[in-house]
Length: 604
Image (cartoon, rainbow, N blue to C red; front, top):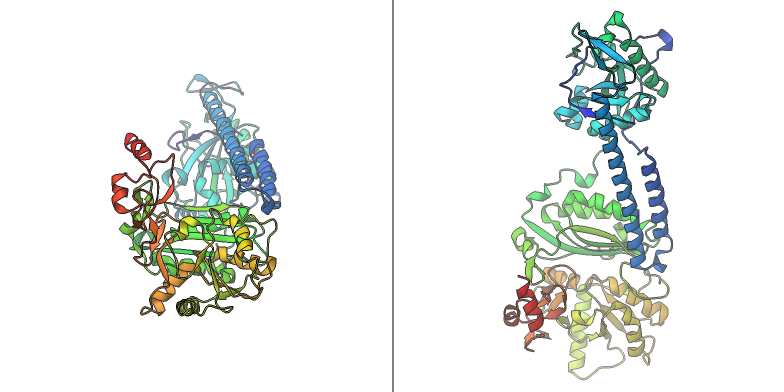
């Protein structure tokens, strides 16, 4: 199919009724779908390859590495990109060919105009107009309201509804967003060969119905172009004065099209996210019992749903569930929460709901709340929803039942239990009823803050936890009270499942919602209570850490003094996670050593 897009200002056409043949009318009304699948062989192959590759991503993802999943996705994207590039190149070549044909091509011999002969290209000139309703609904620009395209003689566009629609969409792109009907007419030609367009058909549907004949089938389309050929060679009606075979096409709103679905309830009366005065940090996780059937499709769905809120963050999706750390404009927070609750894979499966930081960050504060190579940066710059083989990499050979992971202890009950354990230990009355409190986070997290009386597992990666737990609990009775905690609660779900299902412990508790929920709950419901968590809570966004108390728990990597400022080395080739006091951070330009400092300074 070949088409060249040219302004309507050149070669205007008069209109002439297409012949109507009673009950055997060559043109009958049609409802035209706005969905236009690609018809090129490249598009077909790209879709087939995409389907094959994505299906491979979805097969047994827990047995596939994240690298395999990413590689398969990149292969899909590369195939689509290559198909698009080839299609664009073919379109460019086609348009160049059409351009040459307009100026030099000839298939029907020379035509005489004003006594002079000139070549006749093997093209149809198709003038297109849209009704007023479609113009307003689709907010069509001037070029889209009316324009002209060229169709090669014998091409798919001259033989089928689908082909004609495809060419229409290449010029009138807004039409893809609606449903419409097509109708056609032959042009009327003035003595000088010019065409005069009617001015009332676009605003008055009745006039358009009287003037144009509807198109419904492929036969209708083919017949319309045949009539254009006949008219072109009919000197009695002035067709011989036209430069090339011509056809008029009118696009009107389909009166039988179903109304568009109403917007989701959570978007009704929603404020403009761009007008928010603050950003709210939040996190959540969900382990639906049936899992997520198609992580790739689900990830795309989340991106589409959350785009309206201006949400930012990092979200992982796998067959086992979802894990999210995000920031949302505060003025649409309630709408966002309602949206999340309406998603079956989240909804009631978001254990303990959504963890919301108690104090929103002002828009200006948000922009500098994080750290990027030693420089202020927002905690999140964009929304990334990524598919992984697990939402938390645990290194286990088999998936456990995440619905059976011990007692989910509310934050205030947890607070009381820790106070009681601290008092018991202070009085030297530790016994079998004294709980073991495990900090299930990694060393770099526990070094800057933890709960009073907690024992860190001292792991570098979460997958190392199982060996440590086996060693720590080797001689403990199975009814030993065990309490576990982590940042937001998700890792403790896996730890609790392991302790109960793999190790057989019967008295396992975990902090509901993790440290984030504890901090929020204590600030909201027990302001007079002293926090049992001391120091900084490491968080997985650009802020790196959120200070809960002023206690300095760690040592500065540079000078060894007590400190709690978390950052990454400003040298991109190092990017070491570290604790550094304010003085050394300034002195070393955010770098972890003199060597890294020099590299940072030399790189500007």
